[in-house]
Image (cartoon, rainbow, N blue to C red; front, side, top):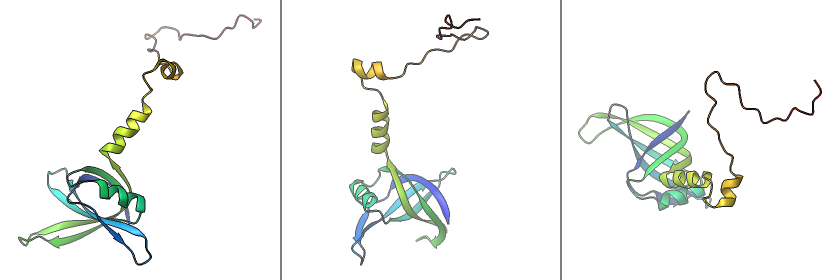
Length: 142
């Protein structure tokens, strides 16, 4: 088993299915581009009902990043050339929507109360200058 992070674009809509046990799962295909510029098709499955529902909302061409168990295989393309195959049992997924939402939540609000509560940063002191000290040591007998 290889734990992997695979990023790419959905090839088509995810297919929601129901197992004999009644649990929901989804199958999907993802196209990931290699460093050489060649693309690899990743066939995937997720057994998480939450991820299956999320995948069902995405459209072909949407960018996603997934983590999970990866296995390698091979197949012959329609023209007879051997191609690499990649199978992924996905455990987590991140989309552009999730990234934007997390970044927005991490930013402080623009109202005065929230910005007053946000930590402030100061520029570093010039090289060779003593550090600023806001500690009042006048009460300490030396």
